Length: 117
Length: 111
Image (cartoon, rainbow over all chains, first blue to last red; front, side, top):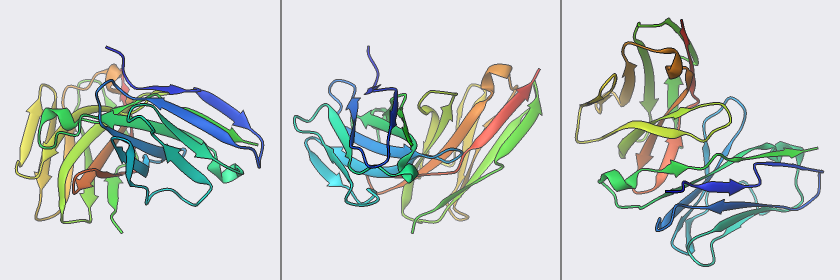
């Protein structure tokens, strides 16, 4: 079946602009995560959804970042007034969230490479 | 805050040799430790994981060990092949959903 998909795969924008990054999780996965990966670093937690609600958004760096998941499936990460420091790969992952079973595995999408000029 | 340290940052081995990557975590409440392989332009892919109630797990050429007392865990790849070349990340999860990742190890298997 289809894995996690993310669009666009690449996004180039100018400083100060608004961007939206989309994540389509695996069908039926209730848990959805957003991570940010800077060059040469591991993924850094941004936000976690369980269903439609953001259970933990403590990783969002500031109030320019916001994410939604209105129907408990597709999620959109929104960045306002982009800054050059926002340039990174934004990864989405989903899981069935059945802990202590093989179904807790996180499946990652290919990421969106964001470049802010 | 929670932290996961990973070493080495780069590792070159001859084809057929073994590779070992080590991670140390800070949060003693961590209960789940996955390892991911990331190839260029792709997202991380789970290759093996271990839970806190187990000390060792093996899957063909890949094994992971966990020392809860010392708060470290290791990935072992035996009989390495060129296709094993990639960046490997360890991660630790405390609670039910928050994963802290290491900084990655770039493994190069020389043919």
